[in-house]
Amino acid sequence: MEPQPSHTGINASSGTPKSSTFGVVRRLTWTFVLLFLLLTVIIAIAWSVMDPHEPRFRVSSISVSNFTVSDSELKDTFEIELNITNPNRKVEIMVDLFSVSVFYRSVGLSRDIVQQPIYLKKSSDKDVKIKFSSRDSSTKLSHDLVNDWNKGIVNFDVKMLARIVFEAGIWPSREKFLDIYCGNLDVGFVPIKDTGKLLGIGKECQAAS
Image 1 (tube, rainbow, N blue to C red):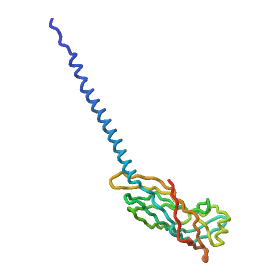
Image 2 (image 1 turned 60 degrees about the vertical axis):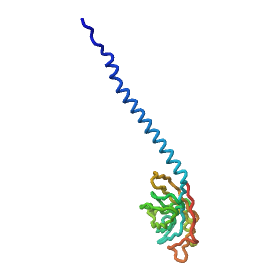
Image 3 (image 1 turned 90 degrees about the vertical axis):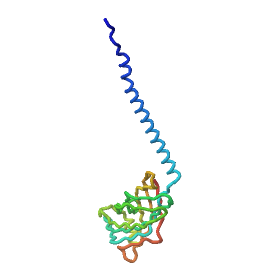
Image 4 (image 1 turned 135 degrees about the vertical axis):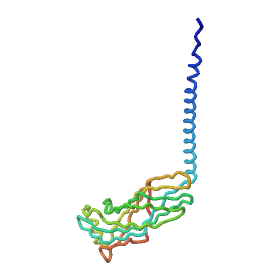
C-alpha cells in the first residue's frame, strides 16, 4: 500500500494569512492612535502659544421707555448698547448663544436672547444694541423699586451669558462659556417718569468662565 501524502504543511501554512492580517490591522490601529495623540499635542501647543484672551464687555448706554411700575407689576422697554472688544491680535472671536437680563437687586425684570452671532475680527470692537420688553407683567416687585423710581433714580444690574468661540486660521476652534456681570448701573427717570437714561459714561463688565 502506498503511503498517503501528509496535509500537515498545508494546514500550517493556511493559518499564516490570518495572523499576518491581524498584525497589519494592529499596527495600523496603533499608528492612527499615535497620529491622533501627536495632532492633539500640536494643537494644544499652538493654542498655548496664541494664548487667546476673553473679549471685554462694556455697557455704553441704557435707555428705558414705557416704564410703569406698581407694587405687583412692571411694564418696560429696555434698549442696551454694549461695546464688545476683541483684544487678540492673532485670534478672531464669535459670540453666540447670547442672553441678556436686567435685574433689580435679585429680581429679574427683563430678558432677551440675541439671535444673530456677533463676529469680532482681530484687535477690533463692535457696538451692539439690544432692545427688549418685559414678558411677564406679574413679576413680584419690592417696595424699594417703587420708592427708587418715585425718587427718580433706579439702580439696575445687567447679567449676560454667552458662548465664546476662538478661531485662528486652520486650527480647530476653541470655545468657552462666560458669565458677564455689569452692576450698579444708575438710570435716571427725571423729569419724564416713564423714560430713563443711564447716568454717567457707562461701565466695564466683569466676566468669569
